[in-house]
Length: 129
Image (tube, one colour):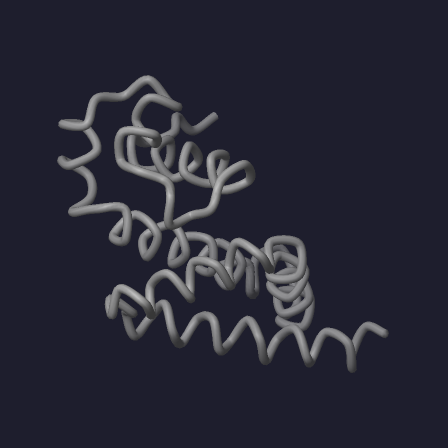
């Protein structure tokens, strides 16, 4: 079993808080208090909460995309799982994208991965309806 890294724990803490609170209202202090870490630990891992959002989003997209070709896992199943993640976490993804665009901190990869997930969502309904 793989132990979670500090980044993973902080990101998980952020996602937990995002279920209860608007993302723009979540502070670094909220994130660290929720998982029992210090703000120093947070800042060793991330520049700010926007950096955490980009890192977390990139990791989540990579998890889905890295399944292609593993154990006969077909690409269309990967697309299906990506669309399912987007659909299940739509509010989170949209709120993050809005917050990032308001802060003018949109990362190209963040933007591209959201476009891919939206396209995948459309493919999902055509291929698996």
